[in-house]
Amino acid sequence: MTDIDLAVSASSPTAEEEARFWALLEQAWAQLGPEPAAARRALLDRNPDSDPDDELYAIHTWLAPFLDVLGGLAAELPAPELVALDRVAERKLYDIDRADIHEFTDGSDDGFLYARGFIVAVGREFYEAVRADPAMALLDASCEEFCYFFAHLHDKRFGDWPNTGSGISRESVSNAAGWPAE
Image (cartoon, rainbow, N blue to C red; front, side, top):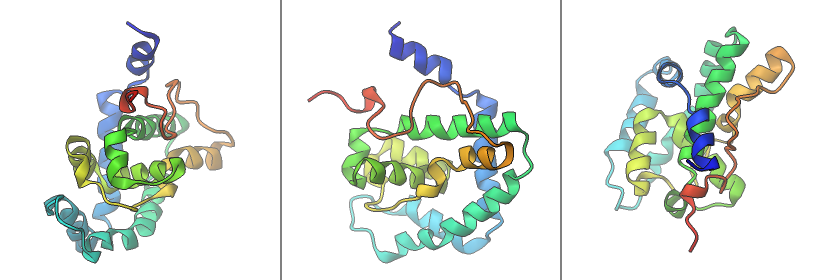
């Protein structure tokens, strides 16, 4: 096993942590009602080979309210739970740090991080759809605030940045397996 393999296996969130993460995101989206649910469904139901229309970007208007609700749901969580949520977010961002996904989102290193933030923030179904078919990603869709959302909550509440213990980075082009040498 290589050092990279050891880091990846040691840093993986538990199934329970992942389930809690996705459930919390779904709870936040559900509180916003049927309009964002329809916008999220449209992202999943579209043909990725067709040009996206403006309706697909309607989800952008719901990102700030989503993050507000998510922040409220996580506001009183204890430090270990915020660290676990940040570890899951970090892992999800890391796992889709891939050249084939970047091809469809474009953007600088920061821009690609924010595009991955969008992919994860929209929810598990969209995240899994993009993982399976990078063409499902949207050009220029981004959610910068989500990339370090739980880390910022931890810092605000407890006065320090959480240590996920993962040894990985959510920053772009850090997942060597996602960026094979040409």
